[in-house]
Structure formats: structure tokens, C-alpha cells
Length: 324
Image (cartoon, rainbow, N blue to C red; front, top):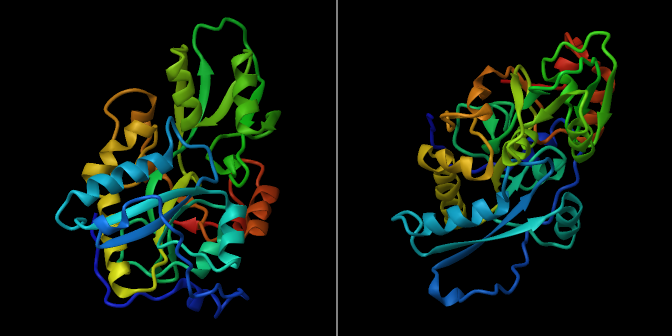
């Protein structure tokens, strides 16, 4: 992974406001009283983790907490503590309106307000977190779509179940839907319907992990070309020294040694191969050509869904996507 450093952190809101009407967030953050011995650290910084899609097999917030602890033991992280908290997208928006702001934010699609608070970052090879020529977010973990079938099931079926998260668009995943009849269900309902038998599931890494955990007999074929199952991380810190400390942490988070640990939470990396066996080892994120920008407004996400019925992507939809 090649990173080029920049000298100044530019807020994304300043860029976006040239093209889209956005309401600027408060610049001052109200820091809470931390339930830790703050005197033990030179610097205490906050991380908000917002999960907007199903993960893998563990907590992304817990992973961030664990990695912040290990980073604190490195030369670059010594003396800095990152306090990780879980927020919903709605809760984060309310907190921002009340004048709170994290130093680091971990988020996926469904949090367009992040555009108002994140700062520009050094360049990175993955373009999903770019706006124009500037990078504003790094992808620190990811998932993908799969065609999942039970093995050893004798009955034939043309029933197709599509697992669709709140902000996700699985109909873009490269599966040849054609004129097939399919049922779109919320992720957990799709999974339980698949378990009842007699269907093919268009699912995600979460379903693969669930089935693996219950030692089910199944075959999972990666569906690449598109994935919007990406968790990003951005920096919101205003202070230059705080920004530098946050940058050190998120660069550590996307380093190969840490990315290899994503197997602990059943997620994959956009930068490295992290699995040596199992269904997830067959998934290569580099084969994806499109994603959805994490800064996309919700109405545009819904527009992408409305316009897409599987198969070849309409030009109108391509224009709303991020080309990788």
C-alpha cells in the first residue's frame, strides 16, 4: 500500500459545499469525562464506531478498541489512548448537532454527515473514500456478496432470496438475475428463510460466517464487480497534534500486520489477502470495479436501488457509483 503524506488537512465539507448544499457542523467538540485514568496518558482521543451494515463474526468496535491498545504499545502510539464508543447513525447525528464531535470516526454508507467533519488524508490506493482528487477516509475492513447454496440438498429449486441491508444494494453485485423471480429480505430474515431449505441465497460475509459457525454444508461463490460493504475510518480532530496522533493510529489500522487480524471478526481487507482457506479465502476485493461512496446522500442510495434490477448497470446508476 503506497501512502503519500500531505502537509495540510483540508475539511471535506469545504470541498463538498462548492457542489452540494451542506449545513456546516459545529467546529468545537465537547469532550466528555472519560471513565479511565486520564492522567496516565499524554493524549486521550475519541473514536465513534457506527455500524451501518452487518459485519462478519465479531464486534468492529471491540476490534478497534483492541487495536488501539496494541497501537498504544508501539513507539508511535505511546502515551495516547483512544476511547472507542458505539453510535448509531441517528445518535451520532444528534450528538453532532449538540456540539459533540469525535477525533476519529468509523462508518459505512448511511452517514453522509461524515462529509461535514472529516479532514483530508494522505493518498491511498483504494479510491472509495475519495472526493475529487482528495482522500477523506480509509477502508479498514470490508465484506462482499456471495451466491450461497446448500450442498447435499436433493430438491431442485429456482427460488432466489436476496439479503439486503438498510443502505446496501446487493442487486449490483454482478449476479445474473435476468428474469428470475427473487425475494428481497432483511439480512436475518433472508438467512433464516435460506435455512428452511429450497432456495439459493444472495448473501454476504455474515451469512458465510454464520453457516461456517454452525458447521453447515454449503457452497459459497464470490460475486464480484461491486461491493458497498466497506467500513471506513476518517479523522475529525481539529488540533494539529491530535490529527497527527489519529493519523498514526489509522495508518496502523490499515497496515498489513493489523489487516491480517481481520479474520478475528470475519471481515476481509481491500488491500491484502487475509484468509488462507474457507469460503472467504475465495473472495478477492480487488475484482470489484464499483462501490458506493460513504458520503453518498441517502436519497441517492435509494435511487441506485430503484434503478437497478440486476444485470448490466444503467449509465444513470454508474454515474451515482464510485469507480475503483
